[in-house]
Length: 608
Image 1 (tube, helix red, strand yellow):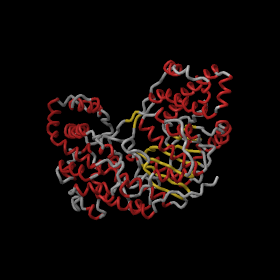
Image 2 (cartoon, helix red, strand yellow):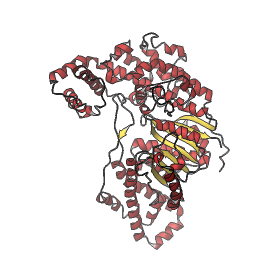
Image 3 (tube, one colour):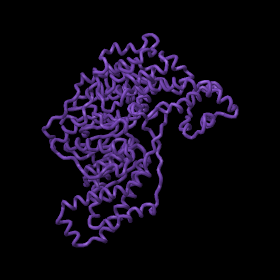
Image 4 (cartoon, one colour):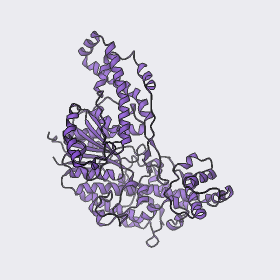
């Protein structure tokens, strides 16, 4: 199917993207000592004295008055507010000591080198208008019927964009990389009638999708059974005579059913947890699930029994009872299959899935580990022309998604929103490692030629959420202070500078600093009996007057976070613009950054 004749939105030229990358990289390089510092070592390494000249109150006042913290960035693009002299911005740091000396200039530079200010993004409205043309978007299911507010916002915005991309390309297959619990995949399948393969490396995610599907099928079957029992011939005739009204009723019932399913989804949600002290808004997490009995589920269906009669069969138009099927690699990665197994699965899978594959709104969760060398056809046996998507793909997975898109002719478009930058592998971070490895950063030739390296602490800083801080969601200064003082105790009293163990979420469980220290020492397997309460409090009293230094230091890291993210995202965009078969590529802000801090998508379409 040929694409429509309408033009894609105006894209940022490759030279302009490369120029913006070079300018941002120049400023970030000067700020790297700040970026690479870890707040855990704030007191033990004397970070304030080593890296910052102005006093803490001056730093905080300057950031709030002139920098990105002066107001929320969500709706602002204020390139005129800052001077455009890159050399001038560099003078915010001392040439010899590398210390920050001009906070006002630093604040202006941090604002200037943000994505919203550099003019490198394509507005989402322009992309949707170009892709959609005169067609109307789908209506019906609301994502907030069965997701939390954050996930609902992300899924609704991204799914609409993906639907427009697949319609523009004239295809129906979507590959969701790092699909997790399947929120985006299932919505694309149900709402937009697409054939979606959700690929995730976690068997627990795949098993979770299977279990939720089993419970949801019970709902559909229960509604279907009661509907058929109560269905009257005249009702059927009335429904057939009034198709428009029936369609409207169907929509209402679909929403009611999904509202009932909300309780299932909410009990099975991902519990987000902060894993690193200096990364207060990262999107890493651990998974907690709760099981439900049939007794828990059935009262919800019975409460609406009187309302649902002839329209109940329309529920099946939302998602067929067996429209979701789960395939796992028996707790092994597909990449580990021997060639004979791959050939055998290619022969048998299309037969076993023949009836399912004919469904246009199929959703298939798959378990596999995706790398840059992954052969999609080994995982998706009926692979055809498709769009590859990823909603908050962790670390290297976002980079590998773009590499697969560029290399595989079947993948006609990509829409990738990355996250967890601290999990990226960097080519020039550990020089002794294998040179043949495919790295997550850098991707583009310019940064490779420069041997660019951010470092893990800088990438952790990129995960901080400036917009949340700008609207009043403050950093957890007290918990960071506790951890920094604890580090002093560990090094001075126990002689430990490095440990494979982590303190974790001890602060939230502690009633006082003494309690925090004792809990933490136990986690680190250190004997706390040699440390009296008075000694612990002596450390607290020694450093408590310096808590404002820690607050100001972390605010500097928060203000720098978007600049490091600029470097990572422009690296990915420039990589795409280096490829020869790309018709259009761009960075698009999809989400409200207060709701979803990792809000930028890398989008590209291949030449027809």
